[in-house]
Image (cartoon, helix red, strand yellow):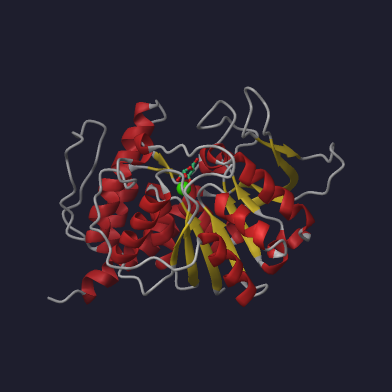
Length: 347
Ligand code: RIB
Ligand code: CA
């Protein structure tokens, strides 16, 4: 099914895989991309996103710069998780593409007004710019066809504090405004929420990189491991495989450093796959709100599954999926994109 997508990212290693997944999916039409401050500052997010579009030889796609800071608190970034540029050990050349004249919030508002009822919004970073868009256009929840959010943690530990998840942690006020705004959305337009509960079951491992390389026809086949020195870089013949190997290996090292295993949770590309095919996800409705004043629990997403608050559900939380189906699609689609681009390269 053809899907018009507004993508809101904080590129970021896994955000870049979400971008590549969408570009590799024929049913996806990216109308525009909002660059939101999070993993790295907004300007770096925008530069990274443009560079990934170049890597994938994407057609012109509007990328709009988001707010420099969250709604109410200073920006916190996480270069230790995503690397100095935000793309792990990979370094992509600066893109000649130019940023949109309009802001990320204006991009959201003007695109949903231009395509009422047709657009799927996909947020894989903090919700700052979506919240700003909602302030400009309160009708946005009814103008969107669907919203998919990567964020939050419910019956699952946080990854930034014991209870909160990074995207919400960066801008909890924005998240609270977004979930509140969608309280009025009809059931079929409730946000699909891919929280850590499900995204931490999406465990990318070195064998997935090998499979991607094989699908792309890239040589040599490279097996990365925890003992590789930080300065090692991929010698893969295919540029997308070379990028993915250097980017994801940083993520492997980060997860390994925190005793999570030599793996990487693929939060954002999973959310992208759900945005294109909600049937991938088993969901359960709940009323979601965000703690803003808790000393220990600020930025924690809370799900009222049983209607104890007496408020209608405002979210469909993903509670089940088959990670193998996702990885099969990721490898097949991104591998085919890489192979296609290599075959089109001038000899
Ligand atoms: O908590 C995981 C999320 O935070 C992912 O979107 C990752 O890219 C970071 O933004
Ligand atoms: Ca992200």
